[in-house]
Image (cartoon, rainbow, N blue to C red; front, side, top):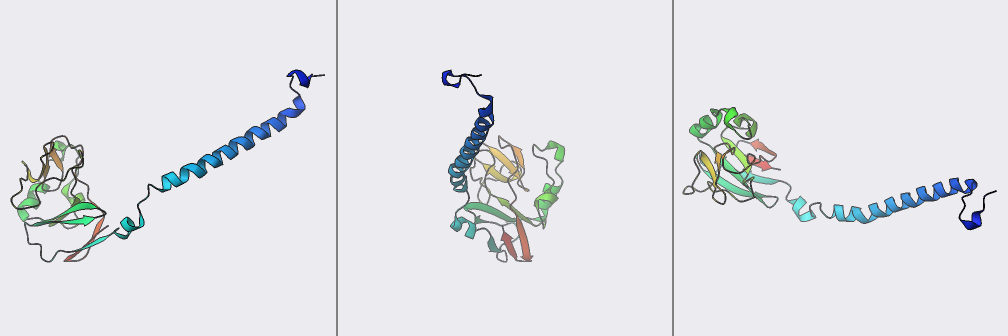
Length: 182
């Protein structure tokens, strides 16, 4: 006979202990999830940001060679009406030379319109190159003066510390002069 009064274990109590451990573990997991879920859920975009989920842009006043900046989800989006020379230059690049190889055809829906998030992929600066007098870097696209990243006419990183090309957001052309970003 086992003496349970002095610390001995009774084999008949083992299933009860196992159940109590499992029940306590399950309650702990449920309690942790109940505390953590609201914190994770708070990281989702707020209702006012979701209301700006898409932006419609009238492209009719944008002439060939011009660029505009629109805001989508609080970020600048560069829209450039590219010239034939810019399109040809972007298409002629040897992809083996690129840090983040991506053909121009994958970055555009219509070759004459380049749409991308205007944020440098190095540290989140806004590159220059949208205005006529801005420096466009060595490749005729955009230049980030903060750390010296140079982008080409397709928004691909060509020189400097940026690790990736500028991002192309989800977008569609409703007709020849209307763009929807998002």
